[in-house]
Length: 299
Length: 213
Length: 124
Image (cartoon, rainbow over all chains, first blue to last red):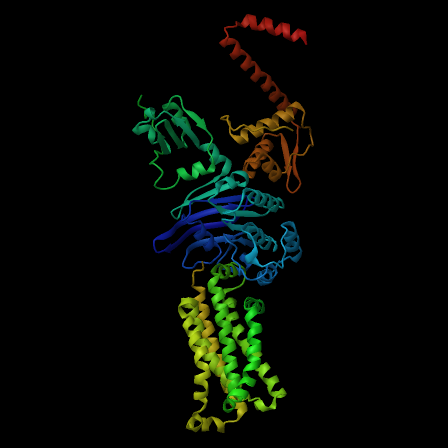
C-alpha cells in the first residue's frame, strides 16, 4: 500500500515553540486523524506541508515527489480547508471562486456547481453573510472541485453543530469511495474521528507521540476503574494517567494484562480516542514502565 | 494566472475602483476650473498618483485585514513570485487606465491642453520610483507599520508636484529639452522598468522567505 | 450476512469480523462466488477502520476462504472443501468443549453426559 504523504524529520523553530523531528506518513485510501491539544503543533505541521512556513528542515513527499522541488505540481493535487476559510470576506462566493479556481489545472466547474447545489449555497452571496457551517461547506466545495487526491483540513469542525459535523463526515466518506485518495484531518474534537478515522497520528509539544491504526489503538488501551486503596507506587507505573476521587480511581493503561494481574475487582472499559489522547499529553502522563517485570505487584 | 491575481485586487477594491474612476475623470476639469495655472499634464500626474496610491492602500489594508486569505492563496499552486508581481501589475494597470482616461479627456476638452506624452512618462518614472521603494518594505514589515507612507504621498502630492515642476529655470531641464522626445521617452521607460524589475526581485525574495499565518 | 461486533469482549475487532465471516461461509450463508462488500463500504457500515477490514480480507485470502481481484473485488472461494470440513468439525469440537466444561462444573459425569447425548441425538 503506497503512502500519499511522507513527512520525514520536520523541524521548525518559532521562539518558544518548535516542531522536533516530526515524522509520519499518510497511507492511501485512509482517513488519517491528526490529534493534539491546542498549541501542540498541528497547524504548524500543516503549514509546513503546504509550504507556508520557511526555514523548515526535513523532507516532505507527496506521491513520492519532493514537495519542495515540485511545489506547484504537488499543490495541484492537494485540496485545502483551513480553519475559518481563508477568504476575502467581502467578496461573493462566486468572486472568491474566480480567484482560486485559475490556480488549479484540473479545476472542474461542473464539480463546483454540483457541490454548491448539494450544500445549498448561493454563489452570489457574500462570504461575510455565511454561517460558520456554510463557510466550511464552501471551503470544501472549493477544495473538492479540482480533482484533489489529498484533502488537508485544519480544524474544520470546531464551532459546528453535530448535524453539520455528521454531514461533513458523510462527505468525506463519499470522497474516499473512488479510491486512490486520502484525507488528513487535524482536530481536537476526537469524537468525529471515532466514526471515520482509519489511522491516528498524535502530536504533543511539537513531537509526534504515536501513529497507529485507530482500531489497534483503541484495542491496546483500556480504561480501568477501581479502589484507590489498591494502588501503590509500583502498580501506578502501569497506568498512563490516574485520576483519584473519594470514591475510587480511574486510570488509562496500555498494559491491561499486567494491571489485571495486579489489581483485583477492577472494572475495565474500552477507551475513547479522547481518553487516549489526554493520557498521552506530556505533564499528565506518568513515567510508564515500558517493560513489566514479574513480581511488581506487592500484595 | 498573473492576470487573475491582478483581477483579484480589482475585485477586492471594487467599490473604490469606480469611485477612483470618477475622481480621475473629474480632477483635470476641476483644476482647469479652480486652478487654471496648473492646467495641463500636472493634473494628470496628480490624478494618477491619487488613483494608484489610494487603491493600493485600500487593497493593502484589505490584505492586512484578511491574512488567512493570503495564506490560502499561497497554499494553492499560485507561485509566490506571481502573487508579488500582481501587486506591481495592479499599479501599472491603474496607471495605464489613468493615462487612457486623460488622453480621451484631452481629445474631448481641448482646453485641458494637448496630451503630453513626456509628462506621462515623467509621471511613470515618479510613480515607479515610489512603488519600487515602498512595496518591498511593505512585503517585509506589513501594511500596518507602513501605512503612513500612503497618507504622506496622497496628501503631499497636490502641493509638492506643482513645486517640482516650477523648476523651469533649472539648467538640467535644458539638457533634457535638447534630447528628442522619443529618445527621452525610451530612456525614461527603461529607467522605470529597471527600477521596477529590481524592486520586484527584492520583493519576491522577501516574500518567499516569509512565514504566512 | 450478519456481522455484530461486540465492544465488551476481549477478542480483537478484526478477529471477531473474520470469525463471523468464516462462520457465514461455513454455514452456507455465503457461497462460492458471492462478493464480499467493498473495503470502504464495509468499514463505514461497521464503523471500523479500512485498515482493519483490509487485514480481515487478507487473512481470509491467506486461509483460502476468499480470493480478491484488484479493481473488481473480493469473492468467496470455498474451493478448499477439506479445509471447510475441518473448520466445521472445529465448530462441533468447540461446542463439545463448552458442553463438557459446563457439565464438569455441574458435576455431571461422562456416563451421564453420553446418556444425555444418545437420547438427544435419537430424538432428532
